[in-house]
Length: 451
Image (cartoon, rainbow, N blue to C red; front, side, top):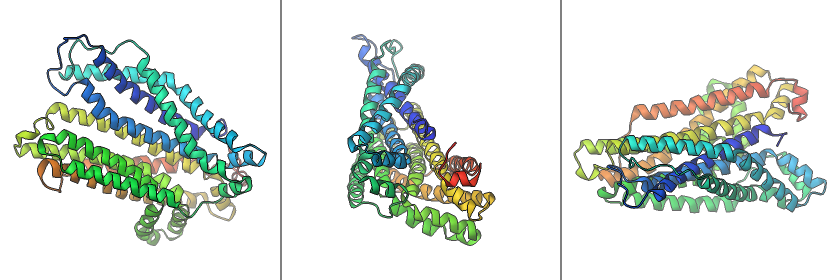
């Protein structure tokens, strides 16, 4: 953990958000359960239990998605070290235990501050709900650590399960094969992974159908089904991303290869030659664009339908409901942004040896940064395209449910800001990490030494 601080800082940030999120919505449930019998209910809104269930489930699932992605990436960064342990007689069981303990230790380190942050957020969120008449004035967050303890326990279970899956491949390899695999990228995506991706894609399609067939008076359920389908489609995208992202890079990279021949060729070769690294970089960007785009388009479609004077949409288009959706959007964007920055920075820093070798054969640092800039543009473009496809499918299903049309009302300005935000996170993240990665003597970098 001391050798790979960047990877574990990324994992710690993801675990912090997961524990805080579960604590936040668990505290709302605890507040509802602790309310005295016969207490007045909220003047407006669905109630704390419904808010915690409907909005919390998506936020918690996204948080755990980010945790699994961060943990898998941390293990991939340790591939060489774990392979070396195998060559000095470490058993597969010991390697699996090591990775599990890393997940447990990191979770326990962030558990207390994350629980406090989640409890504080629950107090603020409940106060805001009460101010908007969506929570009864007498409801209070109970002074108990139980929600935080449950959050830590659940996050531990998810982290340990993710660690078992992440380390499964290297722990089953022979030591010599593990060393070889650690120094080369596998060109193929495994058949089981592709089959699981197809099965997940089928599940997402079923959720889209469920959302599209809801009646207008059940528009809230249609919105939740559409948002959940976008998350399921994101999981399918993560499973099938290597071949899909490689094809998109080949298509979208044509103009960049023509404009920046040398740097464009290097960027194209790097991205297409390391498909799994490309997919690891693209999926967080697609998650940011897909989830935020889905929420923005759904909210705008509901508002547009309300202006058409459809009385069945009164709940969906109320001011309080729009505020809830905006709060959920802010939370989801926060998760996705952390995932984007963590993944891209760690991926770029992990290429220090590659940059050192390129420098030794005559590539200037300016050319390397130019290459990284082209890569960042391509990663952003591929992530935006994939995220837009997911957002289009989910928002079209929601639009079919609430308006009868498959064509949603798209907020062009908001979508433009989403793309700009993805670009603002991707370009500085990659270039900033690249500046640090190319610093120092090239010989030391090519030898694999790290600061």
